[in-house]
Amino acid sequence: MTQNNLSFASRCHGRGFALIETMVAVFILSLGLLGMANLQIKTMKAARSSETRTQVTILSYYMLDILRIDNTAAVNGQYNTNGFACTASAFNALTLQDSSRKTWLEDIQRNMGSSANACGQIACTTNGVCNVDIRWDDSFNGGNSSDTFSVSTRL
Image: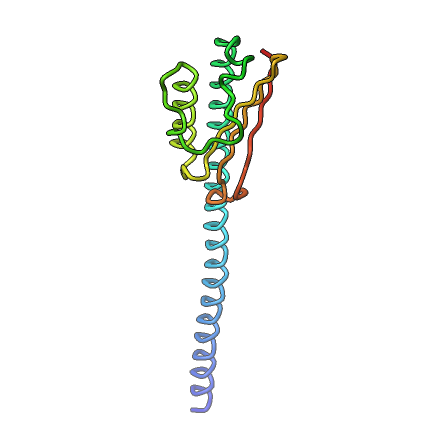
């Protein structure tokens, strides 16, 4: 009888050991899955930030194309915003220049999310050098709270 009791005890001990092994394996698997989920979230934020930067680049070149078309007015400073403009209503849209700036700024605010932090600046000098700057808040996408993209060209 002692032999039967011994084999029963060893069988129970083996079952408990398998349970502990299973629990450890599930714990390690859950850590791996949490790591993969975190990696997926970071990848999605980076992709959104990259998409935002692409939109900023397109909008900057859009304004440069407008400045090239109407280069006489641009060189005379009629497109200049005198610093960052953050509200499209600042341009009354009665002239071609105001209408272009208003549409451009509305596009910036529509594509960059928060309209309070999405601003644009145009500065053209009399020698034909124009700078176009766009500032936006990229903190939601894992970027800086105030990113700025600048492009400069000679008309």
